[in-house]
Image (spheres, one colour):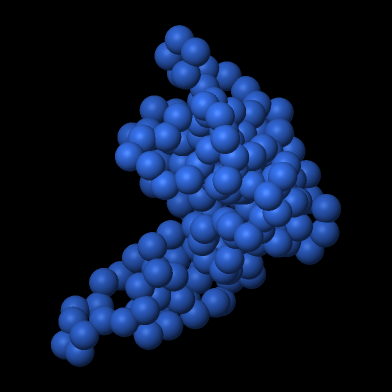
Length: 197
């Protein structure tokens, strides 16, 4: 996930070998600049760039923007601490994806090429610090599809999808934990980041 953000390496730097997966674009990743982040457009138009974790647009009209909103839990303007009472996402939310084909040049000096050994995507893997779970992928077109954000809890009322979470399309729902997630690497079609809370 880091390779698209590294644009240059000094000469005589040892080349590091790592796998670069095709990028998974989450088209309706919650826009943190909206008063209601779950009302983000579903076509990917609310992101400023084409990389995995580029920020959301901030030029939203006043009634929908949280930047000028007033009231506890509504404003998202700059502050030492901000407590937004509305979650960015929720269980059951339909999450829309578009993914790149392998063979894209990425990383320092575009010297790495994205690749995958996986078959056709069938599942969406959601990986966090304490949990790894799957949901079914519904394919709607060439390199496009959606899933429902999984429901469940890790401890008490702490949802399994919370915070920034790694999301991947896979061809198999292999049982893994956060401690052996590399076992799923041969089955990853595309990789991205989802902002759930």
